[in-house]
Image (cartoon, rainbow, N blue to C red; front, top):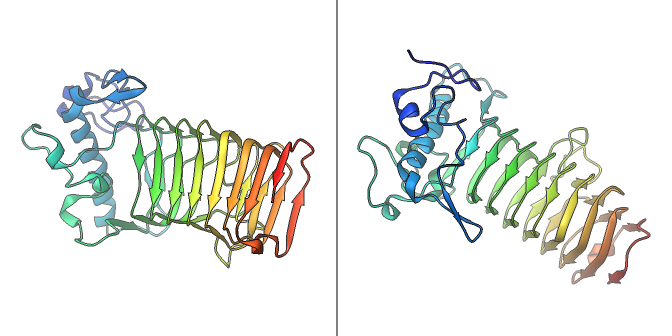
Length: 306
C-alpha cells in the first residue's frame, strides 16, 4: 500500500521509500540526519550521493511542471515549505557513479533548474514564479549565484546551517524574517529589494557569523518603504559590512537590533538611522553617505570611526 507524505500529502513512491527508508514522508520532507557524516564542522554526504541526486531531480520536476502548467496564474507560488534540503547537488563530473535512470544536473548552478531547459548563457535560471521556502531547513551551503527571481521569494522561519552565497543574484521581492544564518552570508554584485514595510526584511533574524553586502544595489525607486532595509530585532553575533553598495533610500537599525560592529565603506546612501545596540561603527570612503541625514540614537556605541 502506497501512503501519502504526512507533511505535503504527496504520494510516496518506491524511490522515496528506497532512499528514505520511510513510509511516512517523501524525499523532500524526510529527516536527513543520517545522510551525512560530520567531520571538523563539515558534512560529508558521500554515502548519500544517489539520494541527493534523486532529491534534486524531484525538486526540478516540481518547477518544470509549474512552468508547463497552462493554468498557471501570476502570483501563484511553488510550495517549498517545510522541506529539509541536503547539500546542493554536485556536477556530473564530480560524481563517479550514480543510479541508472536518475537525471543529474550539469553543474551546481542547476539545482533548481531542469537540465532540459538550460540556456548556454547566464543567468542559468530566471523565474517569475513565487518561491515559498518558509519553515524549511538547508543543512549545508546554499549557492543561488546567477539566479534571477522576478517573483516574490519567502525565506521566513528558515534555518541555514551552511554558508549562504548570493553572487549576481536578483531578488525582486524577498523576505528573511525569523531566519537563522549559522554561517557566513555574502551578497555580492547582486540586486535586492524587499517587501513593503508591513512585512519586514530581516525581522528577528539571527546571524551567527559575518554578513557582507558587496557591490550590491539595495532597494528600488518606486518602493513604498521609508528605508531600503529595516533591521528589527535582528541579532548580529559578528560584524555586518556594506562595501561599495548603492541604496535608493537608506538603512535603519531599530533599537532592538544588536551587532558587534557595523562597517560601511564606499557606499552611496542617503539616510542612515541607528538606534540599535551596535558597539563599533566604522563609516569611511564615499562622503556622500552624509548627504542628507545620519541619526545616531544608540547610547551604547563604544567606538565611532568616520
